[in-house]
Image 1 (cartoon, helix red, strand yellow):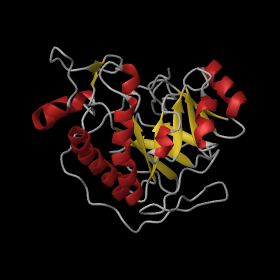
Image 2 (cartoon, rainbow, N blue to C red; image 1 turned 180 degrees about the horizontal axis):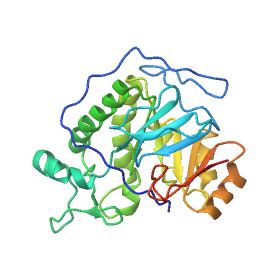
Image 3 (cartoon, helix red, strand yellow; image 1 turned 30 degrees about the vertical axis):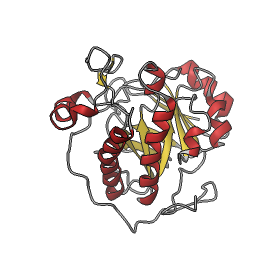
Length: 278
């Protein structure tokens, strides 16, 4: 099972930003433009130097061409920018907003208690029914519109794998049905959308409309091939230890983007900042 990184800060909001239209994406020889969608979308360039900045935005290292940042952060000028959204769980600082406005969309167990991902202290969102998935998608699609309006080129929806961690309550089919509400909206806004972690989706994520993959620690767990089997070289790998980073570089580093970051995804000058790329 793939783990995921520490959560970054999001600012709660209630209003969806207007759908962004008319911005263009620069494709290069390593980038495939997807067609047959409401709008043409471009996944990240294959094997391009990448930086993972969901813990806080900063000037990317020299040579970086692709950056992932929090949805509240401004994209990096002149680069391919991926917008991080927590689509399946609630940021701890947003709990009050969700409870006040959408308490019925928070997952509860048989005893009526909130279901919490203890590793990150995040309440899980309830994707079990079509009505709840539709209501959740209306919120998250508003975030996606905001990413488009800011000038991002792709979306990174995190915690798809809640169905693996809470498999007595959630199913893969429910997650896929929810993704089918997010992916077309992202495409209509001109944004590519990633499969974040979880190998157990197999081909269902791509069938739902996901365009590329971002995998934390697939080198550590020997799972990078599970992602390339589905998405080819449209994969970005993030590792958090030296040994796993070296393993990933050896396994797939010649073909896909691989970086090492510190677990807290800190900025330069923090004292714990780590960044390497192969």
